[in-house]
Image 1 (tube, rainbow, N blue to C red):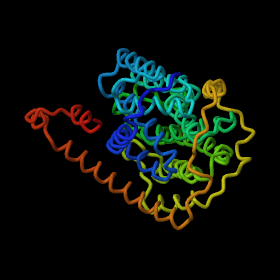
Image 2 (cartoon, rainbow, N blue to C red):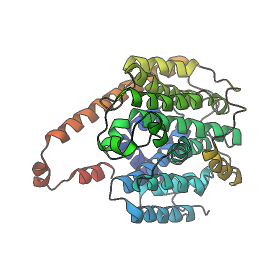
Image 3 (cartoon, rainbow, N blue to C red):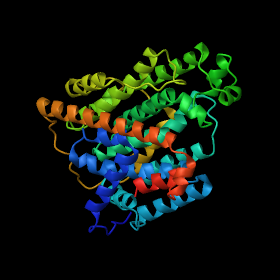
Length: 379
């Protein structure tokens, strides 16, 4: 891959990526503030491209043409001649500076493609294969941004991404069903006497579905329990932020259990006080380097680890130093991040309420459709 001649625009491109994330990926935007600045910048570039790619396939029409356009964009990014899109230019720099294999981004886009084609997930292995693409890839790429490439560490990064996606699936069963999507293993539904297609046509919660959701949460917990070996290999300044992500996402599963496992009629949200406690726990918690060290990789993630192993090594990079923030500064940052997160969530709920209360004719009167509004917010 050639070095992109983009030296004149990196700051502006990164600012555009941050604006995009603040508008469309609030959870990541806030969580990224707990990472060292040297990691935060390339992570924003990576996530901005992922957000645009997901929207291109899932929101803005989708279909094979959208996937083909994304792959063409990746061809240009890899060649160092990206389109005049800030996220593409920023990703071109990151792919060079951190030697990110093209195969990881191809796998991510394949996962989005599976979404657009309503791919059926019959078994847990099928769900693992999907999660490996849409989330395991991101875990692996985040490890590369932190300068970690050992196969054992990449395996645990894939575990973390996969576990977080399983948590997402368990939390969003109702929302996904209302959009005509089912990510729970269909064979598991049949095991408890639920016909997947009939249920998808009229989703409802009962004790049988609780069993399936709990089973998926247990699989996520199994993966969360073995990621410490990977976190222990990260630069010390990066560990609190990644540990926070691991603890906060695992807590979503615990909160869902406290609500009886019902993710049809409600969405599990971790209370603010609990989030703050977990953020502080993330700072003080020492990862166990032996937890998961000898565990085999999920078979569906093996191709990601192989792609990293075959990639050339990057030039030396700065990972933000080897020292984490002192506890008093981390606590202040954690409180600030939590308050920002709560404010952004409140703004999002208010925006959703306004959209629900605005009739279609009112949007047409000003010449702005919901899709136009989404595009404008990401510009």
